Image (cartoon, rainbow, N blue to C red):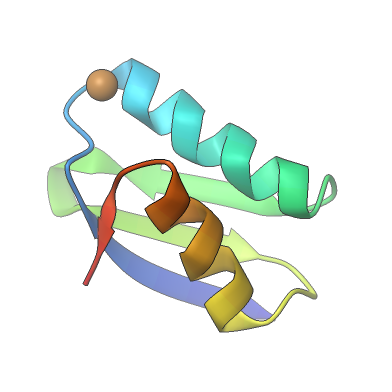
Length: 64
Ligand SMILES: [Cu+2]
């Protein structure tokens, strides 16, 4: 399934990498597409929506 999140605080490429890595630790086969200009993170995964939101938030980014 596909989840779309609005994530605040991703200011540079390193932030994108951090978010991507956090999601991949949860599901190594997840597909993560980040559009920083729109603060969106789209994740294709079998993991539930809340679980993905949780790992993104744990990296220090606000999931709104
Ligand atoms: Cu950054």
